[in-house]
Image (cartoon, rainbow, N blue to C red; front, side, top):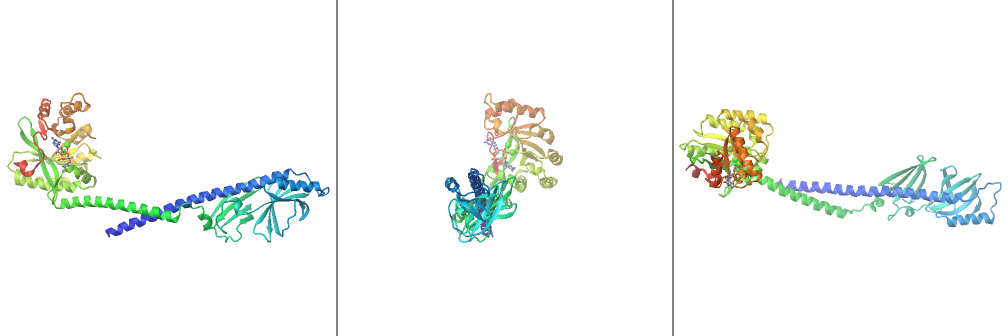
Length: 497
Ligand code: C2E
Ligand code: CA
Ligand code: CA
């Protein structure tokens, strides 16, 4: 099962990349074909305009006075010579040629014309023994015509073509088919087809460039080989990353769950000492992960993950079970003190912790000791009113709340006002500034102490490492000290003894 999922991920990413790349290639190819259809149409228009301009330079004629003398014939020849696209020019009427620039022998099967302006018609001549059509431009002069044969309609004159029998170009006036050229053997099954429309006072023409797969293929720039290569590499990379992510999250998550089951999350106790009497008045209960191999993992290596992944609740429960055991086993005859347990806002969102604590208190398992909760100011509490309702139930059982890491986070004033806490714990970050002069934080510690005092809260200083800090805090009226100056967090046996 585990392996199948990786195959599925690979195939899925591979297929999506394949489709994506092919789609991109197809999109680009189609854009280029649209552009070519436009170029083709522009060329076509230029061809006609250019030829019409040449015909406009010719003199007026009428059947009554017309005479095909040397002068007229050489004028026709000169026009053919000078014009870019005209190959033959004649004076005609009703299929009779009165005069021509040069003699070309061809068998005409049909001629179709369409009026494109006041004086001009466009015509298509189909020749019996030729593979292509001829385009003619007819100028109406009084009762006679100047008929010009324009260049043969060869696809390669218009668009780059590297394929055989692969394209067709169609033109229709007001949706009547007028001209189709391309390869005679083109089977008419379009793989791509793009249209361009042109409107003038005399006509609405639609130009359509269509082609087979071979025609389309010359526009497709990324080969299947490259597409498969890129898609495979990408799918491989994504599968590998997915595998790594699974491995990481699976193992961390599962190992913590196993750890909870095996009761590997144990409390260490850090004394909180009254600096005046040097008596231990309480302690902070700090979690450690005691692994099966005997190693001890500090909380910063697993708590953030546990908090982010909804695992902290069962872990705290497991911690409380140990705490109760330790008290029952080692703490019953020790002087009364509080045990301060760290909680997160999530703990106040459900009844789980409350129910467990209530059962302990009903069973009097703490004896003459007290349970206390610590909530950090670093995490936001979504609904303060709801949290207060929950906290009041703890307060009613004699469990108080301490604000941890005061001064570092979100809560500040509003937490103190709305949550009804008993104690403020000054963060080590501010205690560290004692003895420094004139930094912002150095002034902050005095402000926090004064705020705590004015709010009628008890103050605990955390992370106190030196006697000089103890002395300074005492001067400010802060006597409850937690820190290495007195003790590091200790295992149960050491702490209670
Ligand atoms: P915290 O709640 O701020 O706990 C105080 C931390 O400061 C503890 O680190 C403690 O060992 C350390 N500390 C105390 N005095 C000193 C000192 O003088 N010098 C120095 N350098 N450090 C001192 P610890 O035990 O590593 O815990 C780290 C954090 O892990 C705690 O910070 C708390 O946020 C979290 N944590 C620990 N146990 C639990 C728990 O059961 N539940 C939850 N949610 N978080 C916990
Ligand atoms: Ca704490
Ligand atoms: Ca703290």
